[in-house]
Amino acid sequence: MVFKALVVDIDGTITNPDRSLDLRVAKRFRELRVPVVLSTGNPLCYVHAAAKLIGLGGIVIAENGGVISTGFDKPSIIADGMEKCEEAYELLSNYFDLEKLDAAYRKTEVVLRRGMDISQLREIVEDNGMEVEIIDTGYAVHIKDGKINKGTGLHTVAELMGIDTKDFLAIGDSCNDAEMMREAGLGIAVGNADDDARKAASMVTKASFGEGMLEAIEYAFSNGLLE
Image 1 (spheres, rainbow, N blue to C red):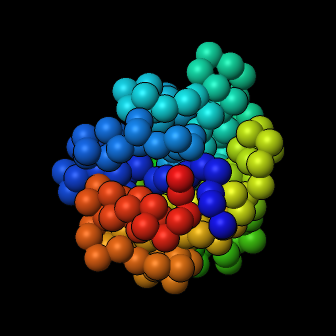
Image 2 (image 1 turned 180 degrees about the vertical axis):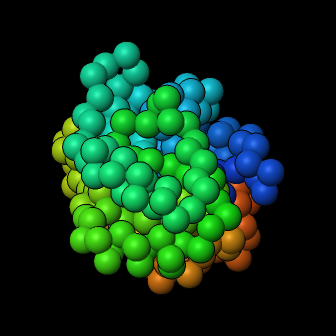
Image 3 (image 1 turned 45 degrees about the horizontal axis):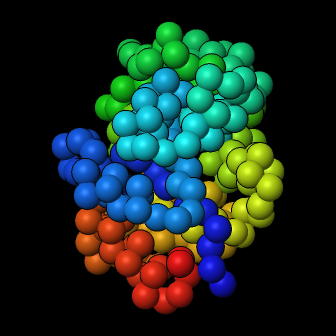
């Protein structure tokens, strides 16, 4: 099978350990004949800026699938769910000293600075019957609608592009990339990936971070998965 597009995470996947963009990856993306879709837990303004600077298209997945951009300067598809996330935040604030991140830019989820026991957060929202999911990506803690993820976002993007989710090669490093990798035709985790991403992936690169992304692309070419 030859893939028609790539869908890739940003932090920890196309970056260096200090979160700076691996410029070799950006250059490699621009050389590809297939479109590259960025998929991230970050807000839309962040991922649009990254896509612009790299030289990619404006169709992107933001907020872990909660926000789908149909292109630069075009309307976005914004999922419901922020109200339940805010309710969960208010509840958890009774037990923990929480700090919101990017609050002015978030449309579908509440994001917190790391440092608390995630299992305790999950137990509290479960005990109160809240339909939210709490994930730790290694960069931040996300309170999100349990029915929304990068996998559902990939379905929407595939429809926008007129192809199937199985036409995508997905590459990531974190738990929030797992659904995306399962929905794609092939999922590859870079060497620094967490356990959830590794379990969802069909292969794991030896190299980590941006170096791992380059390895994944070369693997695809050497096995006839990209042209």
